[in-house]
Length: 326
Image (cartoon, rainbow, N blue to C red; front, side, top):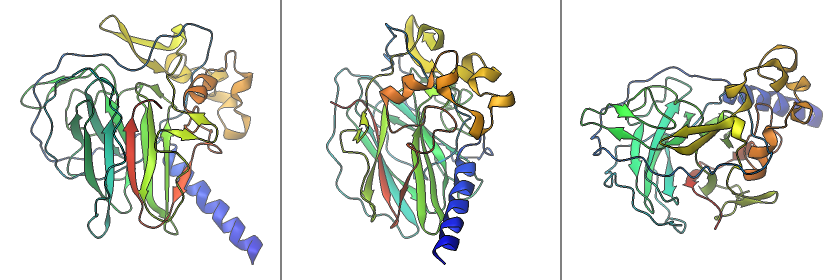
């Protein structure tokens, strides 16, 4: 009986991971939202590298949260690092969870959402978050998708514009996945036997530091409120020059090896693409290690499941913090 149960659990987890680790899901048609005034691009939080190091590549993964329309703060980027304390508990409507975004960096973030499955869908898929601000949205059970932060954006009154990183085809309200590189918060809620699966992914690169906390539920949070796990804390990505993404005369992101090179030798395709055959330590340069050093709990390449996928039970709520460990 115990063996059979273990086999069933292993099979179920494999199915859930296969749902999380493949890219792009179907586009959805979110409701229109008021667009903030255009904003000049600001610094990105991904510093240029000064030494030899490595970053990661992973096939895009899907996940995270339903949103209700929310009042947006002005889209002006004021300086000043802010680290907000854990927000008070917010009761979720039946059949929904709460997801809170916290901006603890020194620039405005245009939060975006993309969905892996057509239903349940989000009514809003774009928000503005000024430095030091937080925003809580409602997410339906069984939602499967991702959140990420866009940087250096400017939009007109019709919601059309452009972002330096994480851009959604020039739309404020996203109807698909964003451009890479972008740090992702991925969720598959009620995926199997009441379990949520969630993770931070840098498989396609990184544009902002990020960690996820559990705010409600019955599972002990594996990440501290200031972005640390037993393996380490949230630190800047030390991006090698070969992977740097530039805009406006500054480094705005760090792309994955697959995004830049797209070759067999980095497990992007061909004989080393299968999970069992992919070993970043055998790459010409272990670019996966760069992302793993920056955020030890995050995905650094497509098959980095063992140290990067987390679960939660009990109708969990979540907090996504954009920022570094103080």
